[in-house]
Image (cartoon, rainbow, N blue to C red; front, top):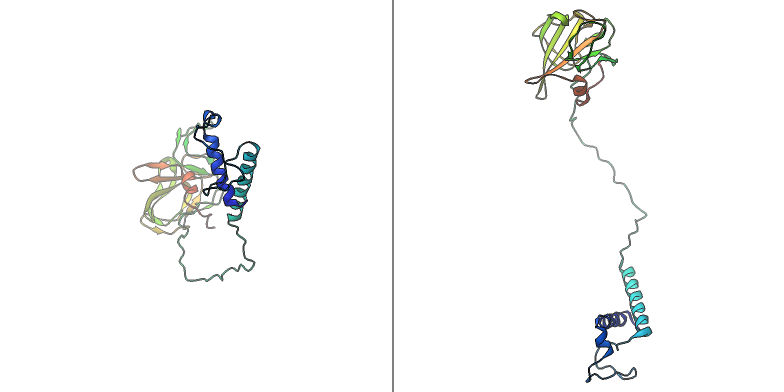
Length: 237
């Protein structure tokens, strides 16, 4: 039996199954029996029941499975795959380093925010971060800008303040407790320019660089977090 005939038989058989039991048990009086040997008057195969029905259904399902498997698309990669040559053209660098650390990488002795000072008087809110740099370490500007203050500033001791505008981002950096100052107000500085040396002037209990970062309209922010989000380059030593 061909697949199309089996599928047709499956459709008729399922129609028979869908009939109610009463219909199958009590056929109408005018119904006539179709002999298995008599020729069919239409294109549908004869109705079969019982074990013959199960056999026809099984053959039809097998035919459907075979048909589906035969129609599945199979892909085989060609053996002669070649990589096209890489053509290098002109290009421009989209990013240039704009920010760098003010001192070589050293531990941060005190972070930003509220703190408790056990060894002496200090503010309970720390507006910057303290780099534990040795006395005399050269301190460098974190970005290009203009010096707005350079001198003694109370508890900060020797202090340098620089205004920056880097790609439209405006901020201010401040460097305190310096041993010495190497710039003056109004002086333009480049990223990495030497502005002084680390020390312990003002209210300080050891050599370090107290560094602050201020945003306009915001005030001091956590410089450590800001550095981490600005692709900061190593200290240009």
